[in-house]
Length: 153
Image (cartoon, rainbow, N blue to C red; front, side):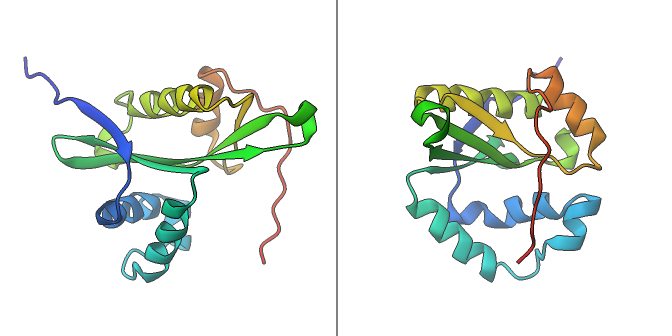
């Protein structure tokens, strides 16, 4: 029996962008909205994210290979008696690793990191068409308690 290499979840660096963007583009929705052939806008966004202490863009790495990513954003709020909330965004798992438990590990990491940062509420959105993802998040204890709305500018 071969032992799997150790998984590391670490802060993303600019050198991780090609792998992150490839994962963002590797599904039916991402294939429409992502542009992995031109990393220029992603580099600009990465710089903004990396300089903001409330942003935690991470990658999951095994044996030197980036196999997952997510972004955790911490937001101080006035509502809920001045609570702090976190948003989990852009969760992606490399296609070779889907179903391996890596998604669970990434979400558990994000929830624990949010706890460490004094967050009171963790939230996320998932495209209405991603029914498998909805079941996954519910299995991890998230509830579909709100209806989300977006306005493209």
